[in-house]
Length: 111
Image (cartoon, rainbow, N blue to C red; front, side, top):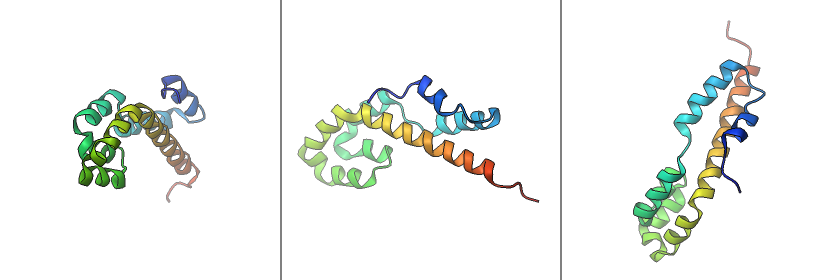
């Protein structure tokens, strides 16, 4: 899958109001992950599962922590696939934020 680009992101938020777009950008900036950072974490701390913990994958993080990356096999696999996993993670986070913003706009204001 291709990198999660700015153009794709703009296409996803096209239906939001200006205020919702600003809220999206703030939330997305706080929750998204950087490919380069995660690659470096995966290379240097991946045997201990730190990269998986950062991507909210606690189960695999614990497996890698207690087995030292399954004797290095999962560590190598994760180094090779980290960019794709980060892009997928960022897409899902963007979709979650958009769904939350759209759900909020449907709720009547409190009286």
